[in-house]
Length: 224
Length: 196
Image (cartoon, rainbow over all chains, first blue to last red; front, side):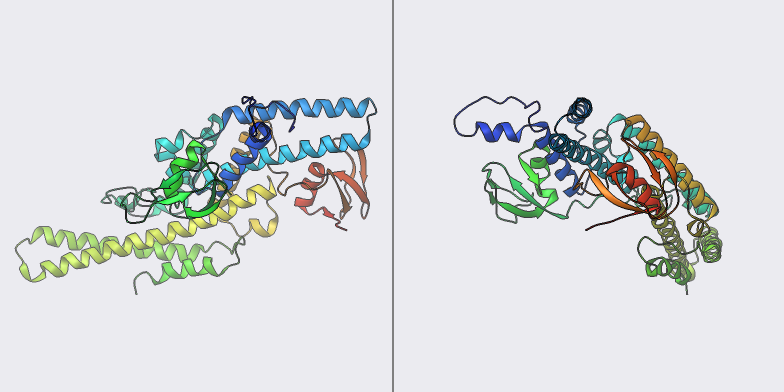
């Protein structure tokens, strides 16, 4: 799998090996999986990455089958199998983590267009059904028995100004992150109270997720 | 004391082990709902009084504050009830990841009717997502160390066609199975993994 389709960066000087390794699909999948596990909110669904990974897994499975049929060296077969298993695990765990995040924040995701657009088509269907089931469950067990102006599952009562019963993702939680390049002085919050922090390449930092959110989205910073 | 029953409900949930459910406390729930309804009656009568006698300065503040207290207690009871239902639903959802379709008896008797329905619906939703993706998400919960693992069969299962072999899963048999095949049996408790 690691020898599979690289993303083809230019071959130049000293970091061509590293950049080639860094951009193989396996590496990308691993990074997406790590980011997803560490982030408190749901991140953008990597449509093309997942698609390519599945195609490669398919190819790999066929190769392994042919190999075993033609009586190949059992050690090689088992190595290929291990590689296949590990990639499958990454893919499954990535999708599972996302589903669990959707389950946890279903109402917030449904309300916020930005979050909704980060889901894949199937995930959107899943999220919709989740919210419907939850609403129905609430209705049946609690809300139908409460007085009229208190029946909403999103607002505490009719006079609430906003949807105050929707649990939201904790954007203030701390995450450990690593930057790939030197990013210079970075302002951690809007009010300018904290001094700017120098983000060096390959150093580990523990920061609030809210501060580095745009960097994670653009791929400059990875969560660990 | 307003709100005491609701907090008892929450305490009951909090004192149970994480991931375990106690029986759904229908009685306490209905008591809390009754309390809500009585709050509503008080609230409505106070509001009516405020409307009908806008010039009665003596009681105005008392009525206002009384109405506010009733409203806030009602809302607090609602929050407690919903938190109770929501957190139990969370536990039920996590069951859906490990248990698949059918609930074991001991768990089923602890759920209310609505919760049983919720579990069914949720499993169906998960099922339709996995079939759309064509990728089983319930296996591979732990990162793989070996492609094959050694298992001991705990219950008699008989002859089974697995992904790469035809195996006779007799009781106490020790076999080498593919990890993905073995996991479904392990999660049901029919097999155990032998390490070392």
